[in-house]
Length: 64
Image (cartoon, rainbow, N blue to C red):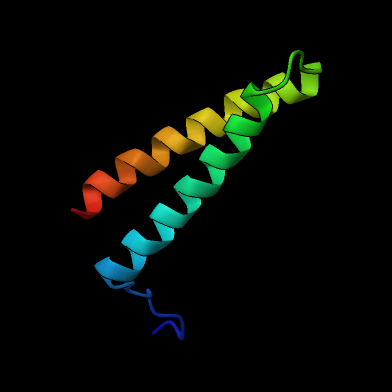
């Protein structure tokens, strides 16, 4: 038998973590969107942040 057990995170704690993560992503997205121009690296980062924010939104809906 494996020594490792799956950790079950309570829904309230998971929801809180996802909300905090989503807020942090939104803050960084707003900061990048507020710039007049972006470097190619920043454009890539912005795209990735938007995808992660959508993922967090979907995960929040799954938590309930």
